[in-house]
Image (tube, rainbow, N blue to C red):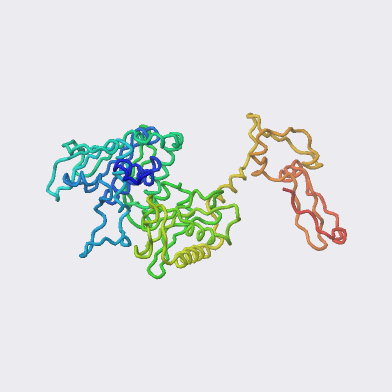
Length: 454
């Protein structure tokens, strides 16, 4: 069989399989484009798990009319600039996107429509749109746009041009959950950007913009991971040899049964790297049991020359030039923060402990514990009650006086004498005098005497 060149449409669909694996992948690429465009508010809509419809609207700088046809071509990007010799350095990447494959890949397997209005400084005030269906490009046409500038990217019928890919998609619920998790990761890394996520017409996530910095980042993390994380997180901020580690790590007592609450970012890009995950696990090795996992959100800021983000088309993996430096920075910074926290316990531990000690006053008419006077033989001999249903949740009599009263004694003083509640009440009322105590020899109590009964 002779060697043939594949048609451009087939080449684009093969490439699309590497970049766009599922609806969440397409949304990730489009959201990163919006962030690179300087957007301060990004709205995401997804219907049918993202397979039916996806809409990404932002208030970024927009795309000029003459650049729209180029934007949907493969390997066309505005994020890499050639040097004086015309060469492009792939090691100096300061943006989230740079490959120029997201828009053409989506357009080759779906119905893609881009409507945009560039900022006024470009000299264009009109809005324009371009449509790509299964790799076929339509001409640029005028369109309406609601804002002063920005872009609206709509994707319909994802993978309709590659029906085989649809067989490998999960349920709509699973795909919607993957979309939500992806937006949360992007929102963690960019607290200065507001995000709104709407799934099947219902707004599930609304995050206002926060001030850039540690305080704003912690508020954003609390809104996503819960206020418990915000209350039990330790600030991490260490730098070594030009590499900075920042973020927040949870207390050892605020641990989890899985690693779902571990988020790692490199230069603002969410990544899944075994080196970073292993370093995080090693830092907590002396503080957690083997089956417990820490909660942490860590950000690594490093010179692009010392990290390669061009390892995988989805840009989810990175390679460090000096992995030992990064690992040592993570382990050292986390251990220093954990040792500085000392024996501080999380607020969730205190709340769980206190919830087990609920005072009970003996409610009479609700079918719960309603005691009568115990006998002189003691509580263990009192059989005039049945175990209430709420006995496992409420400790009866926790806030009441004990039915047994002891007098302190030492040396040749009298030994403790146990009396009933009726005797104590009568004594306080002045009806009877205190009973005399017989002298006792401490030799009869070699192991001591009972002081109280709980």
